[in-house]
Image 1 (cartoon, one colour):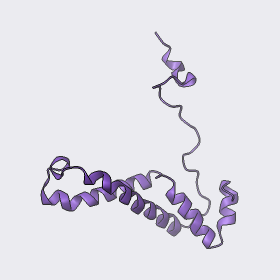
Image 2: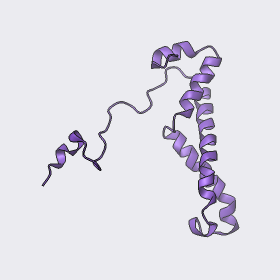
Image 3: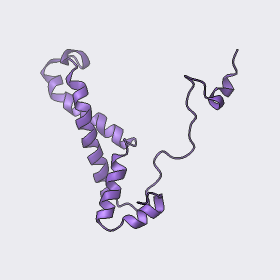
Image 4: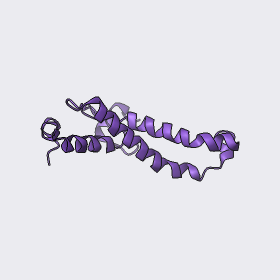
Length: 119
């Protein structure tokens, strides 16, 4: 019988991945709330546009009972999914947008030096 305590250490196929102790998204130093909010909203809109085609192929009768109500509310559901993904850390678009917005305002050198994203 295998020793399950060592599975994470030796990396067997199908075993859970080791958990990192580093934060997923390191805190951004002194980023104004308006810029952070705008970048997250941009990412949510982008993700919504990417998720929408996934739901186009699903019959309206399955997910929520079908009918006109589901046809009306399905785009709102997709938007909420996208917002939840963006709030949970997203796919990195918000961070890139934030850096670009700060660079355009002349505040990027301090941010790049603080988070190590020079270039």
